[in-house]
Image 1 (cartoon, rainbow, N blue to C red):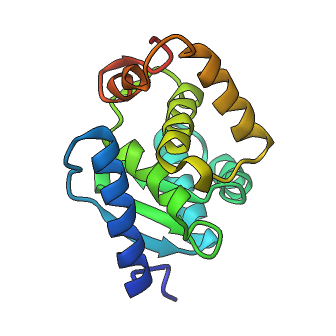
Image 2 (image 1 turned 30 degrees about the horizontal axis):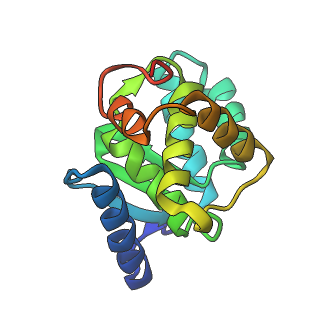
Length: 167
């Protein structure tokens, strides 16, 4: 069974997303592969990640099954590869989000890493950004956080080592 693949449509979407991110951040993105994949393959990837973090195979798989339902895209830094979940992840917003993770240097916590990337995805896409309740709250939080500052501070924070929340 084929677990991931590449299409002409994905190629066009990737070029569009790459141009948006590069123009917004004023940088050149490193080489990265991008594929569409099944949820089943997401479970395999996540299970492997959790096993490497010390979970038992059974516990890792249980966690991976739960998490894979909610993930639309996944960037694997060691493989320099982005996987977009079939159907739900094949869109500009998810790909822009994952491309920001490619160049992200700040970290500290997984939640903080996600919040800054969600906010920057919003700034890049503007009216094309699709909110859900959680992303709306994150965008509002970051708008308050930079209310008297420039968005340039957030861009620089993404590209520097350290705590993503420290602006």
